Amino acid sequence: MLVRRLILAAISFGVAFGLTILITMLIGTTPAEYGPVYMFFTTLTLGLAIGIWLDKFMGTNILPR
Image (cartoon, rainbow, N blue to C red; front, side, top):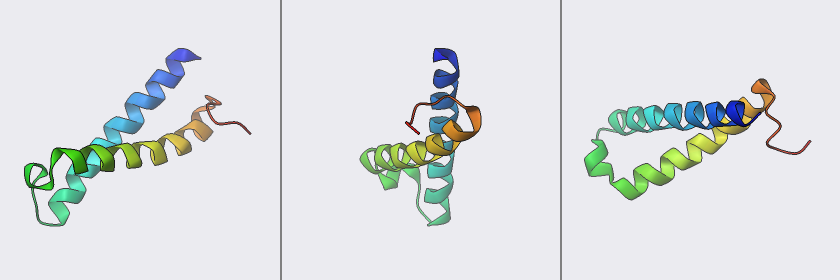
């Protein structure tokens, strides 16, 4: 179960980081101009949202029912 949870975290934060870079490019700025603090918190927020959905489909049961 621990391995599945680690895979979930890696997938969710990897996808979230990619989405954050894509979002910054779409709004017309670079990740360096966007700033490391904003990159961190945007990635964290998107990663948690993606992780909630992946928890349901991967059946890791991190969240209580």
